[in-house]
Image (cartoon, rainbow over all chains, first blue to last red; front, side, top):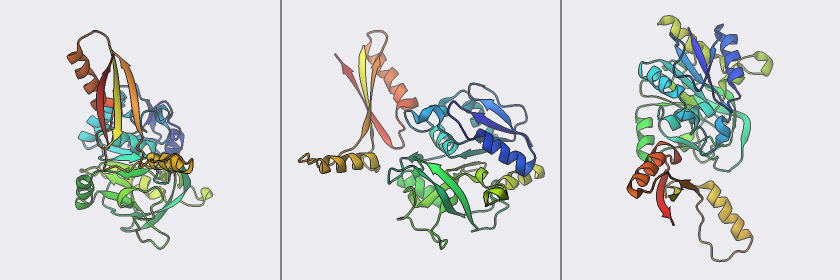
Length: 232
Length: 80
């Protein structure tokens, strides 16, 4: 498997996600600067890391979404290539049109930095195959703008097509849309594209891959990707 | 030529920042504020004097970058 991690001015989690990939799958990704126009030949997986690209100026992810490399990412996704956007990466994917909807300011206006409980809504995507269906996992979140929103029609389509991959849940594992930490519509934490090959999520699976940290709930996400590409 | 672009949230989209400002105005005792919605203003200087061309340019700028039309609408005004 060949992986590329994109680097925009203001990205700051590229090292962590590269380390997580190496730690879990043994694969050392190539870091690709945003001004490049092509991905390294044979790239299977593109990762858009977290951070604050362009200082969140204009709208979070808006300027990065128009970077030169994004045309190559769009072509990669259209070919069925895997794309994973975490946190700011998810915001960039929404702004670029690779995923529908948009991430806006958290409902209570505060930056949220804590662990979140998530339900794995489907385990038949390239990113979640190694989780049990309905599994409850713990990933950290660290964002000021993670409040997922879309028009009613888009939300209905996402739900109808089963494209919500991860949802925020309460301590008892149930979903409560009135108590979502950031106000996200339908408790949405992560969604996949129509062909399931693009995943965007606000929480950080790359933080939880080493038992030293206290949880390895994120490992299965990277194992899923690895297994998927080995099979191919 | 000078133009002003106003980008505002669509009315159906919740605006937590506007709400917070509205609350702050109320707690300051500013009377008669029914509601506040926050938006953005871009002052743009354009080359040339052709207004129709300038309008097309600004529309392109809005659609491509200045506004996210999923949640925002924009308005173009020419100044002076």
